[in-house]
Image (tube, helix red, strand yellow):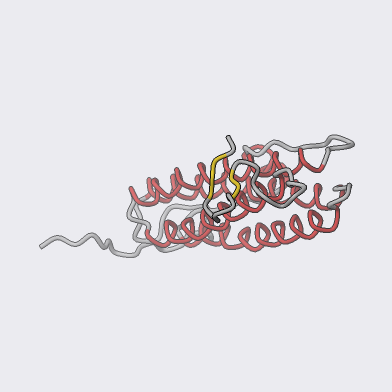
Length: 195
């Protein structure tokens, strides 16, 4: 009878940073690299979300300001979890802003002015890209039977999908009447298609 559990033994990580794990050296290298890329993206997305939170303007200022602050808090809460997961599997993690800049796939936005609708759309697209990157990291974790990393990523994917949903709904144009123009009800109460 064979077992998938390997003896917990130290790896040849940097001196005094070695963490015991039953993952193979290759799994540690690949999973921690994927986690560090996600971590860099999360930092970048957090800063961009706060940037837009601080600089949003217009008639929906309060709603957008609060929405973006909530989303930034959610992103910030995931940073330590991702970094500690990289350490738990036997890898190291990000040490500087410079390292974040090298690894991040989320593009910064340093423009002096961004319209509120463009902010929402840009963040929605960044969150969609983050979801795709997390799905790829999840596949990698599954490949190496790293169920704890996969489980964390499932929760973070769900959170990112909710951020996308809220950004999408907040960016939709409002109907003046409050009703969908494509569907109306006839005098009998039955819906008809105006299209």
